[in-house]
Image 1 (cartoon, rainbow, N blue to C red):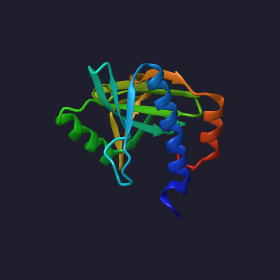
Image 2: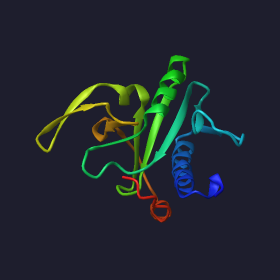
Image 3: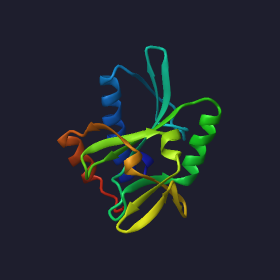
Image 4: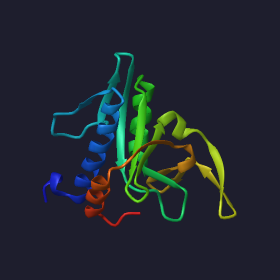
Length: 161
């Protein structure tokens, strides 16, 4: 199967378009790769020639039994390396179950914190095997998804989470 025909790729593309729409409405100019090869982030965002950051978009809902969401730890390490080279990295989560986009800078997501959940104390960031999780309470609300975006993402359900 071709890469672009995979459900997870189609789902991710829908999330990227939703975040791009929001950023452009906020006055950002969004640059995306034109090279058909692996790339270190989804888009470069610039506003007024003063604000510049790399945006990474994760199109996935929060976990069902935990107040968090996350992504591959190897990608997290890649973003940390980018930050060390002077790039600000913003991670956007597109959550079709909640119908919203939320996220934060990698710096904010990486801050250690403890939250109580169902009588347990959970330490974050939380690494479980190859995934690193961040609590939803460390996320900022970004925008609501349009109904057609929610439905389009749900059509690409891959069974994860």
